[in-house]
Amino acid sequence: MDRLGLFFSLCALAPAALMATAVLAAKVEQTREPQLWKRFGWLSAAALLCALASLLWQLASNTSAPDASLLGTWLAVLVQLLGTTISAFSSRYLQGEPGQSRYISALAGVLAAVHLLLLANHWLVLIAAWALVGAALRPLLCFYPDRPFALLAAHKKRVADRLANILLLMAAALAWHEVGSGSLSVLWQHLERHGASVALQLSAVCVVFAVILRTALLPVHGWLIQVMEAPTPVSALLHAGVVNLGGFVLIRFAPLLETAILARWLLIAFGLGTAMFAGLVMLTRISIKVRLAWSTVAQMGFMLLECGLGLYTLAALHLIGHSLYKAHAFLAASSAVQVSKLQRMRTTAVPSAFSLIAAPLAALLVLILVQILTTAAVWPWWWSGVLALAWAPLLWIPALRGADGNAGWSHTLAGLSIVAALTGATVVAHTLPLGLRDSPNQPAGLFALLGMATLYLCLITLQMRPYALTGLRRWSYAGFYIDELVTRLALALWPTRWTVTPGPQRKTP
Image 1 (tube, rainbow, N blue to C red):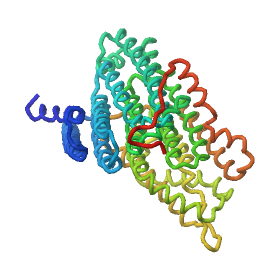
Image 2: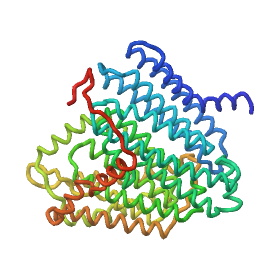
Image 3: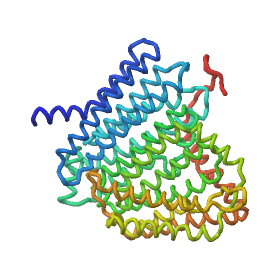
Image 4: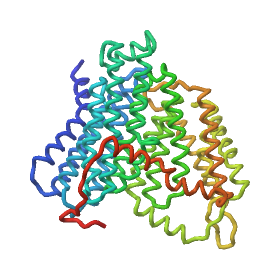
């Protein structure tokens, strides 16, 4: 390797090293909080520049062969960009709060562990890095120790993380015994030459269940909802970054998933089921932050569904888009509350039956038209049907009316424009060099299309006959009581004792 190549290889390692340096600086140096935040900002900006340099170098020297490690470089830039933004927001949000040095140390620790995970090419490194992410995140979740729901959420996440670690160790042991090496590159070569044995298929199943636990899919989604008790920037970090790591791991293990049919169908079943149930629950909630949390659960289900269907490029783009959107949504949650209050002061109207039924067809026509105009069919035909059902609510005649009582058709046209823009952006984004190769599964795709049609039928029923499903609304508002059962089970398997006492410098709200 020449000197230039060595320099850019070090740039790939630099973000993790710089964030580890920030951890030590926050723990060791006894300086005032503004100076700590300023120092962390400089280190975070330097890490972002190194990640960008590494990405540019890899794009310039990368071959056309699929290589999911390139996606890790893209995500390193995204993660550090989000970390820099969240740290700047946190320095203002936590002004005057005690324990800011502990917060900075934990935030830098999370970012360092995530960067290590994105670089991992060995089972042990991957497992250790993902475990470190959870360990570093716990002080952030419990930043306010006088909030019992924050403690409960952190405990439930710890239980889920421990189970996920056990499953990943089992997956690593099965693959290591079969292949003779813990290197992921050696595993991909073995799969290309010999296919997947029973041991490797079981390894894939263990990876899938570990990802389900870490990405808060049903039925272990409760901790992700209850972390709303943590500070707002922590919620942004978790929902925009940490919880998305499951999608990256699945994309990284795409060669193994392609040869393990059972693992892919498990992803499809859990992903589609989570998207459907979380979507119904989200419709019945009022709190902005809680709705955002349930939205994350639904989006994680949708992302894992894409991985199960073999649409890895769409899953990667979904991951990037969801991260940017959720970071903005949580950091702007206060303004969203004001907008919501203003909307409730206006007269509302129910979408017409025609708009509810015609919306999927209109969305489908826009999807097809954009693909024809761009001469790029970048996904199977059945996925256009899934997207049309998912984006159809954008075309419903809105609940806002003018003074004369006429529905705002301009908003419906705006919805069509949004669908066209989303489709065009997705088509264009498929040209990005992400180093991925898709392997669509048509029978599974038809199953997913049927599931989305069922969800859409429930949505229009709730709109047209709101009192016909009163019982369903009650169960949906309670999250179908799934989390209560899981919480009791978690506390029975791993009981814990904590004392809820008010902090000396902060009163319980």
